Image 1 (tube, one colour):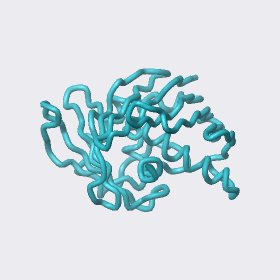
Image 2 (cartoon, rainbow, N blue to C red; image 1 turned 90 degrees about the vertical axis):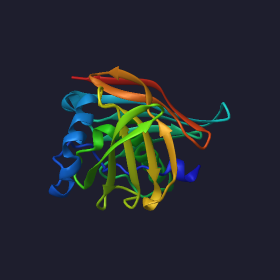
Image 3 (tube, rainbow, N blue to C red; image 1 turned 30 degrees about the vertical axis):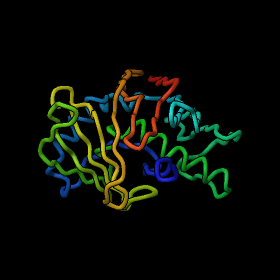
Length: 216
């Protein structure tokens, strides 16, 4: 569970930047995926409310609620009886502040990963096609250059060639096989299209509840 809840690695603030030259092989597909998820509308987003819920064997084992003020660069997170407001540019040094920031890093990455493909420091590599669950998908591998909390981790995304939405991914901690899971039950809010259900091959299920994106 620790690996699951600490696997993501957002930069402090979402910024949709052009990929580096080393990412050229996957640039076109990365751009298509980001666009399918509403990247052109990201600049209008003001706040995002959501709960990150972890289930095992049909029972809830963890929940964190977020009120992310994208414009202000803050996140109010509630989990395990705690409530902390984090300045995402300067998260603070107390144990609760560090834990709250780590929650935001992890949970918001599960929410927004397809919109992060063009961030500075992200390398995307097109790996051809592969059949997943009976349908052919385009494959995009992600690696990172000193980005976020666990930069040695990698991901492999399986993209529907028609919708350009991620349907499945592999999490590769330190580049090695970790776990895989679905990206499904996409919902549109505030001009952004986001997956709200992930069924993992280790029996864990991650759901996004109460998703609400407000935009200017």
